[in-house]
Image (cartoon, rainbow over all chains, first blue to last red; front, side):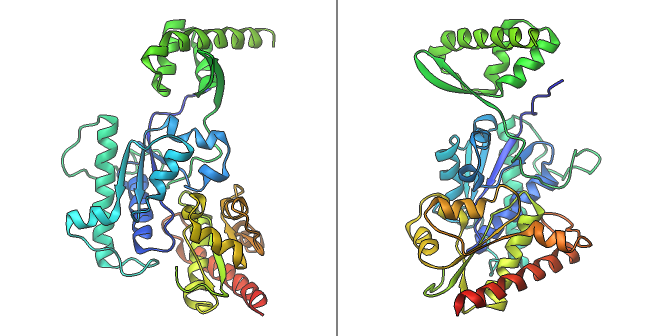
Length: 233
Length: 134
C-alpha cells in the first residue's frame, strides 16, 4: 500500500561554501535534522531546485519550509520561493548572530569555540521554529531526542523520493496538485469516501477558498478516472 | 570570492543531505586553501542557481572543475545551465569505486576514511588544476 510521506518541516540551508556563515548554516541545519528534530524535519540540497525535476520543485509545496541563509543575499529563501513555494520561515544568520550577541566561526571550513556556540544556538532556533510550524509545544529548553525515539539520526536529502505532481485543468487554468496518485491509492485501498478524499488533498495542497468547488470537482473526476484505470488493469 | 583572474574555479555540489557531498566540499577546501591556493577559487553554488552575475561570469570565463556527490550532478548541471562548460567533472562515487575500503561515516562527520577519500579526490583535482593552468 502506498504511504503518504509524514508531514514534516523542510529545512533548506544555503550552500555557502564561500563564507563562515555558510558553514554555520549547514552545521546548525544538520544538528536540527540529526539531533534535535530528526522525526519532524527533512532537507533537500538547494541547487536541486534548479538541477532537479518538478518532483524536487514540489518539495516546498508539500512541506512547510524554513530557509537558513548565511548572508543577506538570502539564496536559500529566494531559491525556495523562485523554484518551489515561499518558505514558511526564514533565518538570516548575520541578523540572528547580531540579535543574540554571538560570533561566526573565523574560517569557512573549520568550526571554533565561537562557531560551536553559534551553531548550537542556531540549531535550537531552527528546532523552535519547527515546533511553531507544526504546532508542537515543548519545554523551553528542548532536549535532543534519543536514538530510540528517532527513526534515523543521519540526515538524508529528500531527492529521489520526489513528491509526484499532477496537473489538472481547474477553472480554465492548468494547476499543480502534489501527491495526488499517493492519496488516490491510499483512499482506494482504505475504501474511504470522496469527502474524506478532498480533505486529504487539502492537507497537502493550498486550495484557494473561492476555487474550492472547482478543485473538488476536478479532483473527484481524476479519482474516478484513476479508479477506472486500476479496475481495468 | 577572492581575486579570481586566471584561476581555476572549483565548484562542489552543496550536498547537505549526502555524505559524498561533504566529501566533495572538503576536497574543494583542500585544493583551494592548501594545495593550490594561488591557482584556484570557488563560489557558492546557490549564487549561480539564482543568476548572480559575478558567479555566472566566473564559471563562463574561467576554467571550471565540478565535483558532484550524487547522480543529480547539481554542480555540473548548474554550471552548464548558465552557459559554462566544466573542463572536468569529478564524481565522488568514482573515488569510492576505486577505494571501496573507504566508508564515509556521515554527512556531518566524515571520519578518517571520509577525510582520506577527500584527500585522494583533492590530489586528482590538484593535478587537473596544474594541467589547466599551463
